[in-house]
Length: 48
Image (tube, rainbow, N blue to C red; front, side, top):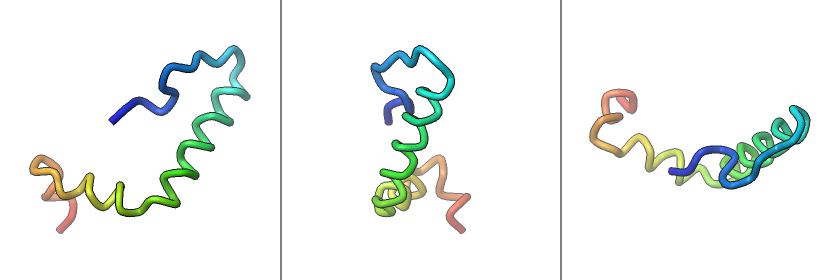
């Protein structure tokens, strides 16, 4: 999984905040991605 900002380099705090908020909103629309994270062997305990 990539970091939240990817290859962009924000020049101000508001720009960074907007980018992160946008990425998190995109993940909200993809619950299967989050579900799959908990299927990983080292995170399976958290899914109980």
